[in-house]
Image 1 (tube, rainbow, N blue to C red):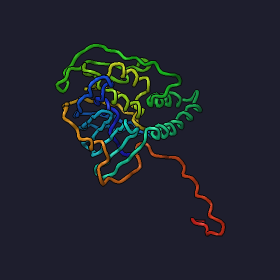
Image 2 (cartoon, rainbow, N blue to C red):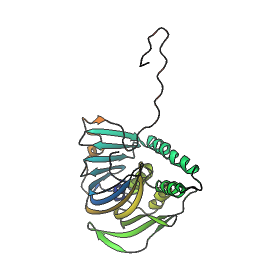
Image 3 (cartoon, rainbow, N blue to C red):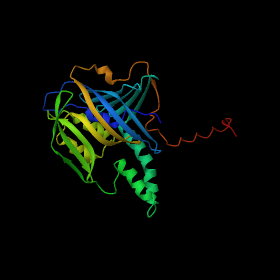
Image 4 (cartoon, helix red, strand yellow):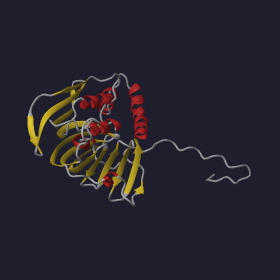
Length: 278
């Protein structure tokens, strides 16, 4: 499975504030990222590289500067777009289809866990399900401010912890500025990168996260991220940056393949020759 820009990248995205506030300026961030990705098949990859994050109202774009890939999250259209600039392909997936494909894949793990009681596999499968934000009951989520200040990419930031069942899921250093991160939080929720209760905890006081050490469910991968913003720019971003480039060809959405069995072909009309191999 090809690697795509990881979920931690969304933690540096700011978005439109509440309707009563003036619209925030476009934001571009550069960050240095260390990522450990464990795939659905339990294969682990480690990566360090640069990313560029671009934000415009309810649109988010994350550029992998090493691999030539971009993930565009269009909250206004309810879809994710994966761009491969080397192959010049564009893969579109509506949020509802994303949720359905993810659920179908995880149902297999749930089924295996149901048959694994009193076996050594039970604890391992429980850990996998928790990594995808799936618990037997609604998890206990707490947002804490343990204190501490830092200057990151020229911005003042404070530390925020979001814990799930007493274990830190997100360890963030966030700006003390106005609420600019609604779209970022909505993107996390739409992509199911964090449990909904975690997204709600972030919405209580959103800001611009500049540093993080966090864990996410990114499509069918479990990801650990260490990241820090190195530059923040408020110059206008062309709207075309959040669209599919001209000339790109459609391609399957590789991070969440459609494993639905194909429909059988209709029977041939009476008198028509049958097709296919005998």
